[in-house]
Image 1 (tube, one colour):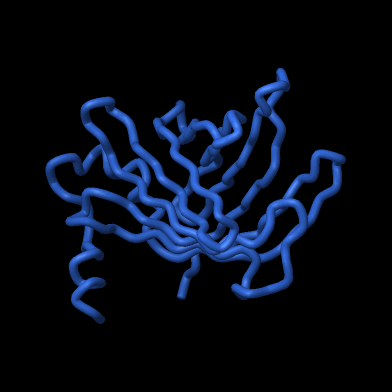
Image 2 (cartoon, rainbow, N blue to C red):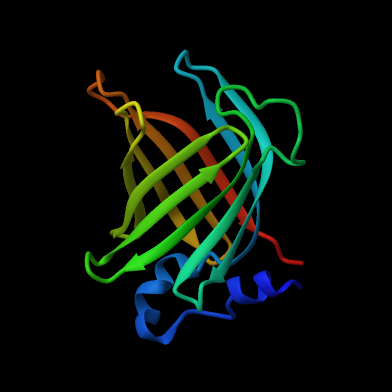
Length: 173
């Protein structure tokens, strides 16, 4: 492991905000996923993927890598495109919420969101560069599974549209 990796990775949550850090910390580990992309015209496309979560920055943040479809470098996934990106999730006690940054350099997609618990779920909200609202939600959260929904609400629309949903299962080995 390089010095960079040793300084980036952490073994667990920082004790200062350990309870709050559990919101995303429960996802730390490796996940297999089934991704369904939903076209605006009602079409659906399904592909396998993988997600990896880990503690970083002295355990003050959770970082993940989403690879869709698997293997990386596969032909373009219709509607959603191929994802090979990372999210940095940092708890901000000044707003009692998470500041979230998604980076997908291959598609030049970059998003900023604020994440909070919403009942048993986690809801992240933000805006695209074009002014569309985004809502990414973790639902049906269990120790070994979760359902993730990626929704968009164009500036000219009155309703949310489901763009992508992901069903993830924790790897056992």
